[in-house]
Amino acid sequence: MSATAPITQDVMTIPRKLPDGPANLVGLTRDQLRDTLIAAGTPEKQAKMRVGQIWQWIYQKGVRSFDEMTNLSKTYRAELAERFVIAVPEVVSKQVSDDGTRKYLVRIAGGHEVETVYIPEEGRGTLCISSQVGCTLTCSFCHTGTQKLVRNLTAAEIIGQVMIARDDLGEWPEPGKHPKDETRLLSNIVLMGMGEPLYNFEAVRDAMKIAMDAEGISLSRRRITLSTSGVVPEIARTADEIGCMLAVSFHATTDEVRDKLVPINKRWPIAELLDALRAYPKASNSERITFEYVMLKDVNDTDEDARRLIKLIKGIPAKINLIPFNEWPGAPYQRSDWDRIEAFADSIYKAGYASPIRTPRGEDIMAACGQLKSATERARKSRKEIAAEAGL
Ligand code: SAH
Ligand code: SF4
View 1 (cartoon, protein in one colour):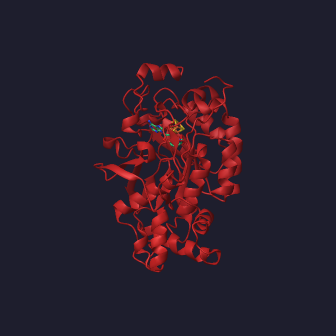
View 2 (tube, rainbow, N blue to C red; view 1 turned 180 degrees about the vertical axis):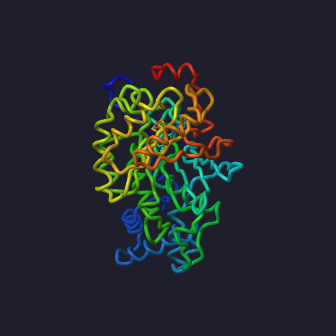
View 3 (cartoon, rainbow, N blue to C red; view 1 turned 45 degrees about the horizontal axis):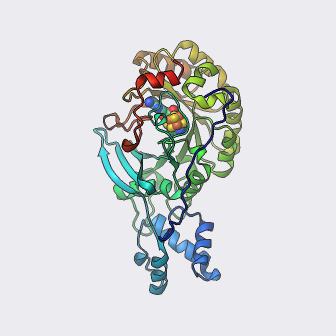
């Protein structure tokens, strides 16, 4: 990619309604659900109430058939069943790591596959969800980046990943007993799976609105973190329209190195990215931004890098999440040595920033950061090809 080449999206969008199948109610916003019900004959006067009822069945109680919606008349249930479905993606396989991490291989319309990872932790559980099949971006250390973008996920497929994880965890609460955030198995969502969420903005926004809706899955916006590689124009919009926590894949302290690691940097270089990040906490009313920093041996892990990083982020409420590089077959990098990672973390900590080192989870099942990729779509680039593209 040259410095001026636009980063384009080559996305095949799929219609929400398949030509002759019933439409899926999952993934519709409240307004869309209302319009859909009215178009199908629900009297306008009743529509708001029906939206509320159906919404609760789908997102609070986790039902998948209209028959179970016992506060709707039998005739109305039958009418709904004729026209609509409540469909979530299919789980093709589930792998459970020695450390309890669960990786779901999820099949979506068109036969494509994405991965969703559940990470249990002390007192909480995080679901890492995907927003695209593949990625248009080609970060040179990322396994997903070696897979071309196949398509954007729909809002249904994004929120569907949360629903299938709740199915698997058995976490649809008994009526009237909504669990407190602290006791939930699935208490946090991170948009850190496959894809660049800000290149699928509307679907991600609609799905996260559903996740946050108090009458349904009801997760606080502070428990949702969206990770972007740095799609600058969409950052302000994320604050306005989603308001969740933001993480940024920073990974380098000079444009020269970041151009190679995160090629979107050629379009929106570090200075522009930092300007957008500076405005985010206030606009979204969130405390701080997470800077993700992958530790690559001899590439971005020197004391000088640490010093530069501290200088760059000055004035931004930040936490620096250091990610030991996770290897994947053919990767052109190595993980920094452990004492180097600790020394790096130390300098940042001494400058007054939290600098946790992210413990790799689920490595034995290739579920760790940047290892996700649809098995059926592996591009199988060689180490040499990747290194050449990265200009190394
Ligand atoms: N596309 C988004 C979100 C997905 S990646 C983004 O880039 O932010 C989640 C995090 O894992 C990102 O910070 C990403 O840069 C990092 N990552 C990717 N590949 C990795 C690898 N092999 N080892 C460690 N972290 C990796
Ligand atoms: Fe895409 Fe994120 Fe991987 Fe970069 S790090 S290739 S933006 S998924």
